[in-house]
Image (cartoon, rainbow, N blue to C red):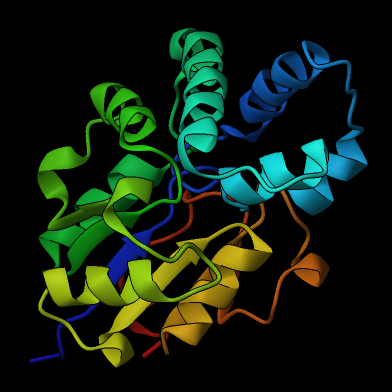
Length: 218
């Protein structure tokens, strides 16, 4: 009997290609404040970062407490409105997750996004019933690259970090998984492999993936 494994997925850029819509939502949010960040600014300071970091960086002052909650709510509401008609999983992920589940892998999702975004995506991508752990930004105190969200996911799934593999697409996310002592698959949806810390495997989508390929990483 092969040892049990857990596979934990980030959400933005891993389950769905949301980043272009986050860019559009942030653009609309910042343009109301007479700011116009470039795509390069976003690549460096938005993808995979927490809202508190992003807002503080672009508004050039510390955004926290109630102000952070209000701004975050405004931006994420814009995002959901823009993205709702276009929610679509990255090619092959649903079948891949079904294959993992059929072979006894434990599955989780761990995102820095708010729960309302997670709920929107889960309402359109039929994977919720396969998941043994679902964590959003409200569920952790420390955000990626801190390993908290991945260590908590492992505990929820009854697994040790060494039994877990994480699918991530951002520098901070890959770093969080590595900091948790887990194997990592880099999803090249918003970055090249050169822009990410070293991963155990790199994929563009899930069309060629199977439980066997993931089990072989252990």
